[in-house]
Image 1 (cartoon, rainbow, N blue to C red):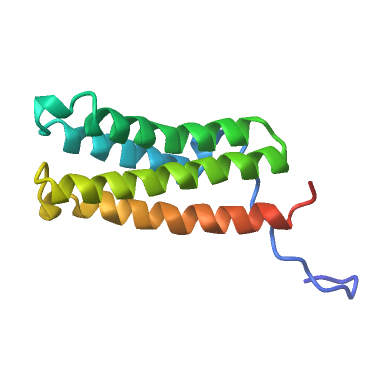
Image 2: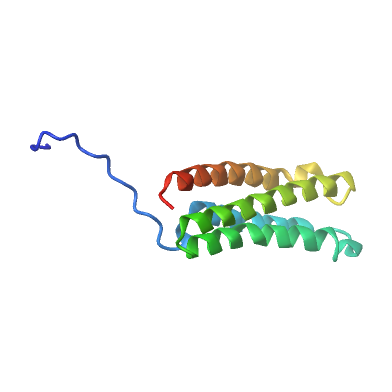
Amino acid sequence: MNTSGAAAKPAEKPKPTHFKDLLVWQKGMELAEHVYRLTEKFPSDERFGLVSQLRRAAVSVPSNIAEGQARHGTKEFLLFISHAMGSLAEIETQVLLSERLGHCASANTVEVQRLIADLDRMLRALRRSLAKEPV
């Protein structure tokens, strides 16, 4: 019991000390794995087109999260979160185009689309949280 008469503060969560501790980074890595597996079955003439674009954008999401967190400055982290969100939008667009072109069935992109939606929510929440911190 708090005997000082002051209201007890809720326990604060410790801040992650490494990007690998961030759930959003872990989810980004999962998305990248799924994109790599999805694009394995694309036609060989897309090797330097959609396959390359999708894979680069997918790698960019967790890479930007890692780089932003590693810089230890809130303002810089926010910038890298923005880059990750841009890459996420690229992936979504390219997956939709891949479906339209018949390179993959929508049934095969369900998990990728779910991860994109999850990451979008998580990145937006992280951005809001970081924006409240002193720069």
